[in-house]
Image (cartoon, rainbow, N blue to C red; front, side):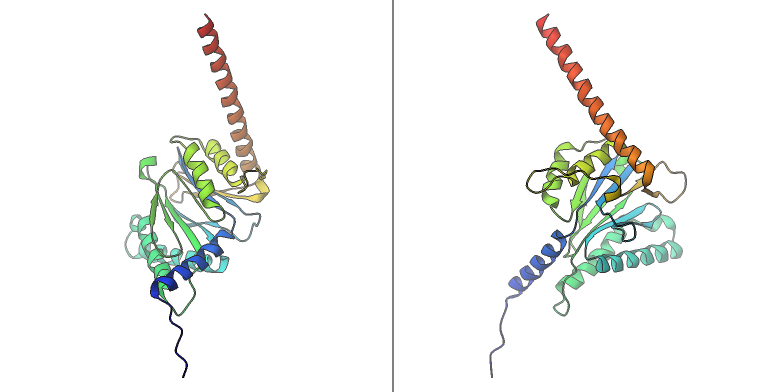
Length: 257
């Protein structure tokens, strides 16, 4: 009788984590940023039917990368949880933190189970508050851990490089056009340092806008509205550069005087 092949628990978990990470890295990235009036979600996604960004509840949205069928099951489960909790208790009792805890339990249970493969997904759950200081963004890796993010976050693809780019350039109080421009610039950067051009047709963009008068704060940006914002962001960048040049010229003149 042959002896069963033994793998230590640590090695088994490391192998499962590596398997999940490789699957997630094959997907195109998603970027989430705070701006002065809410939270913007930007994904490189030419499909208009298979969404990476979706609404969960009144003030809560969901973004994901990885295997579509796996994160779509999680999204549907999140919508059911939110609807049931809001109906049973109160709509204000549905929070991003509560939803993140539910997702963490699900992902953690699947990752720890030897009976099934780990989910090849990474999630973001975000909630818009009454002010920027009340916004909540949670990132959930494949193993079910929860990371409380602030300002900006990227998942999937070359997320580490994109996150580093965002950390250096994101600031509080950005307009939607400025945040959108920064998100597109970060997604357009390849791992080798070269830059691509991403058009509105290649992007999936949505916002949680705290200014909306209705309870539901989620809105997709499509067509001419998205194109206009992209142009506005490029224009504001050029104007900022021109203003900086003028200020520099003025300073140099003062120094000469």
